[in-house]
Length: 395
Length: 245
Image: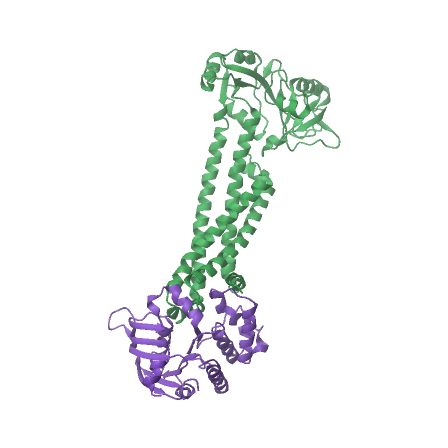
């Protein structure tokens, strides 16, 4: 029998210690994993959304900057309109390489004419678009036809067909997930949007209002070598009634929200780690105190300090690995199952990672639990070996 | 052969030179002198029984011989090695390879079977535990008459059976010295006699050096040399019979 085998056999002898260490590891691994999943997931989600937007500057009606940002990130419908002439005015600003308008619409809430309720719909101009169109060319080999739409990752065509405002839509493709409600949004062309509005007058419970000569935003790509700040300043100075959101600053309020959430969670994780360290330290102190005679016998039989410390730490590692694995599993499952609820609570979308990345995060959580347990067990283990064997055996 | 002549020709197993052990804070009023300037030489192959009342310092003397307690002053050599010139790991290795222990209290690991308990010291040694050790452990259990209980856990064994397992464990690494601390104190008279018979048999068969401490004066006759301790000092040191007899 090796010492590791002995350590494993010995674990069952002290149920209180085993449960306490496992529970502490469960909490540490679970919290570390949940934090990693949330922080990485929100970061990934913001990065993906920003990448999909593909614009350097977003021009919106003055005062609606935050609403539009929320709509674009969270996929929550918004109502923002400005004159279509804004597009040409923006295009004329020096340093602007491309400008393309978008309209933000929404399906009706709970109406029989819409197969999806309160869905955020983005209409784009295929003639000038430089964000959705290139992706469409690549994925579909051509532009969207009249009556076709691209859905977010979780948009699917119901059996009875996809209809908004009584207008039947064909789902041409789905986008990659972003982790938020944008995954339940839809993209279609201006032409289709106007056709939906036309049909809705007779086919829908309430008509789709698409104001004539109005757009919701203008996406701007700046010319190579141009300075985004200068171009944004020129837009604000030259185009009346608009506000701008610069790409690096986009979703800033969400970033701040993430930072607040992250700081809160970091505090909880820090406290949990500290308490776990303390708890494991106390439990192992009690265990080594109870077993000091046995440890004395070990030393008499020829166990070195390293044997004793190794055996105690091995037990802590095994218990922490078991508890940590359970904690990580519980945490991953919880974050996965309660994804929508968490997004709603923290107000920021987050993306569940791919399986290899999830495995890596689980490993990080497990490692944290094992490290905490090792550190907690180490001090009492070292302390008990400092006693001479004869003193350890004396009661 | 006279005692002096014999000491010149035999290898010393244990040498204590003016060994003193004081427990306490260093303040004279609260300190306890457990061993007070003991000098002795035990030769290889001797069976020494040290008797004395409780608190006379015999267990401390045994611990000092094994390097399990540091002397306050004096020197201890075990099998030719000055114990306190070795590192802690060095002393542990020496104990593992050359010393077998039999304790007064139940010292078997509760989560291990009798056979596994016998093999435990092998796990602390430098040699890898292999099937050969299992065979040797089984053989030792046979020697102490408890082979049938090889797969029993300590809780399934009587006190006498447990001490037999402990005796078998003390022999697993073929030690040169066995140190036994009141090995029969928890046993009834019959089992005590059986245990002493085993000690004598092992001593006779292997020639291993045995140092046993006991509070039972009657057990002194089992050894080849008898000592008596009182107040931390050796009061009597006499030969009982020829070594290895």
